[in-house]
Length: 307
Image (tube, rainbow, N blue to C red):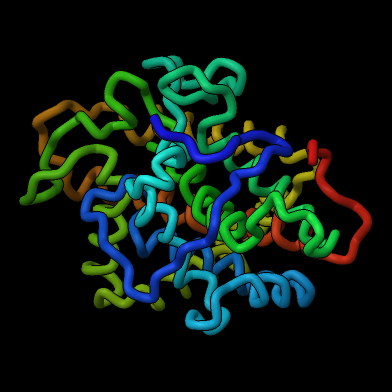
């Protein structure tokens, strides 16, 4: 695997930002769908405090006019480019089959055993990089715009339960099945099928209506009492471990459970799993806002993390 630059708590990626106004598309992107990532980032941006909001706007390229969600899919779109192929393992975590657990030292590595090369390591690393933003531009080791885009994307990925899946089936990618009337696989069901079915059945295919429903659920709805606990984090290493554990436990109980290759998943699976998909999008967005408010805010308090 080609790796450009280093990956670690304080190492440089040595990358030059390359953003295109016209993006290539990756039909089989292994991540929350475009809709899932955009909603995660829209939730986060709406919860930013003034200083964090200003920093995000400063770091985004002008053509997106301050809209973070416009670039939240970017890491999926460039992961197969030669310069960025080293980022491919950062989108997921492979855990031992059927263990239903995550242990950072055991599980966070790429296929060659390089440590920290997983989505949990990526969230830690890019958070650590962004902590240098307040130190000014003297530290040229980091590309702050890329760090922001990678962090925003990987906070979505670590909350997609099947991104912390079993090793042998590649997080459900090799479990082929039917979703209602068409072919799919278990990973893609969680990435996109559930979201698209919800949009078609309940929201007239309007993502903004679905987003409003998710926001209502955490502002004064069924999740409102849980938001303060979702936002609590003073040690980024402990937090990413907790978020990854949440994902693998949901994957075990609600993703894999009772699913066989070749079967058809339909209403029963959709209706029982949809609330978990929407909750994970909300949690990802709320927690991303929490991180950005901490790294860009004026408070002297920060994460307990190596920088």
